[in-house]
Length: 171
Image 1 (cartoon, one colour):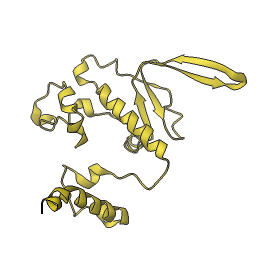
Image 2: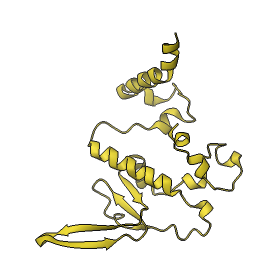
Image 3: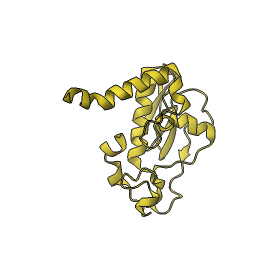
Image 4: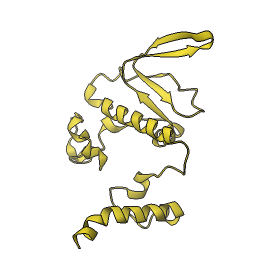
């Protein structure tokens, strides 16, 4: 699981008991949660927008070769597809959370931003695969409807080959 491979459990400082944060991976910590409108939740999961937490300046080349510089003001919302003018450029107000132990992790914002860039550079392709719906608690639940589609069957074949590869090689 990428969460563990990237070392995120060691970054979570949430003081809640392990039983409340998903055990030792701490994936259910408040630091891995954003409360969003339902349309924005789907857009977040589909990598249509991200939060850029890096402090930097960026420039826009305006008409007549005039360059305008804008200092970044914090956690800025960056859409990667059209239709999010209502949130584009807005600042995510994390400074209102007094205890940093309850704030989302900058590393997670950075990783999500990178995934948005990569997905949107590849261009439009088939529908995004919902791993959370398909796998739940890291188990393949074959009773879920997601496996009935052609992409579901292809993805199940991939997962079986990937997960059983070590057994095949050992034989």
